[in-house]
Amino acid sequence: MSFRRLSALLFLWALISASARTAQADGLIRDGVGPISTGRGGTNLGFADNGAVILDNPGALVNVANNGLFEIGADTVISQVHYTDNKPNDAQSAVRPIPVPNIAYIRRSKDKRWAWGLGVFGPAGFGASYNFQNSFAGPQQYRSFDAVAKVLPTLSYRVTDRLSIGGSVGIAASYLDLEGPLFMPSGALAGAPAIVNLQGFGVAPVGSFGLQYKLSEKTMLGLSFTSMTKFHMGGVMNANIYGVTPAPIYSRFSSSTDINWPRSLGIGLAHKFNRKHMVGIDMIWYDWKHAFNGVGINLTDSSNPMVPLLAGPAIAQTLPINWHDSVSLRLGYQWMPNSRNTYRLGYVYHTSPTPSNTLTPYTDGILLHAFSAGFSHKIGRAYLNAAYQFTFGPTRYVGVSALAGGDFSHSSLHAQAHVASLSLLVPF
Image (cartoon, rainbow, N blue to C red; front, top):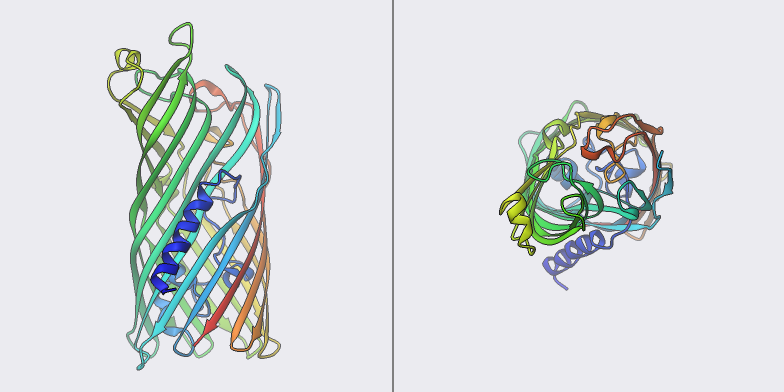
């Protein structure tokens, strides 16, 4: 099978995983991709020892060892979310593992001045699934899922013996699936309660730039910027709208949904004390303020002729989220007792971007801490890599919700997630 065909199949696998309607609540952007980075707390900006540098810092590609590498693996996310309110509801989200595939290929030129790579990753998403009591329609399912997959062709160049730069220009794809009660947030139907089922799919350009600078023979500085990803997703929405007429009004709409994923800027260091001991520290800023300020939903082509008479031919909805920026601090340690084995430990802390008054069980974003451990073992010329990460945060409380209808007022949300990561890396 050609590398191009294999990459295409893995990209489709990532999207199929998104459509599986399983529960996930892992802080939206994962703290590390692949077992090598994940095992040392997601630190990767100053390293060049794994395929995920294509995603994290394209300036690192030309610094990989030998002539390049090939890595294939999967990160499996298992999340647990607990929601309570005064309806009364006390619900645990469904627990289902989500395997997210990753693949990377990096090749250096013969003179070691250039390197190119191609990677397929699933770095972000959100989701949950519950069954609990709704204020206007009785027992209902609340379910959400949005996953992002990226295909990243990347080029890197060694400017001097100390400085290397690189960039990627690729595509991202996103699948959205939302089902449950929702009060119409704006427009002619503002405040009207509805039971909706919204689905959408879209692609968008994505790019990044990075560099690495060798401060000394033992210390590497890394810097990376990733652009905002703006999805305009086409799809359909089925809705039962209450409160407008004595009986609920059903309609099927053509929909377009606008969701943005934030740009980020990161700086990191990798320092090697000696042959056996190495540490990494990364600090990454995420621009959630300009990305998750709101979700736009535009509805047209109603199947019910009554709806255009009540609200017009096009219904524009804006769901306010009003997130604020966050900073992620990642710390990692790596111990290489011999040429065959490597052990890793890591810790991550990041502030929550979610204000309490727009907190919902659909998108939580409340995880603050992550601890991780990892291991690599050399088999022939290949390396088998494994890691485990546990992510958690404190219980968050909502007083009066800023969302229309107040459906999530006086509620609480608690979340944690487990990530098991496995890969095979072959240098050449």
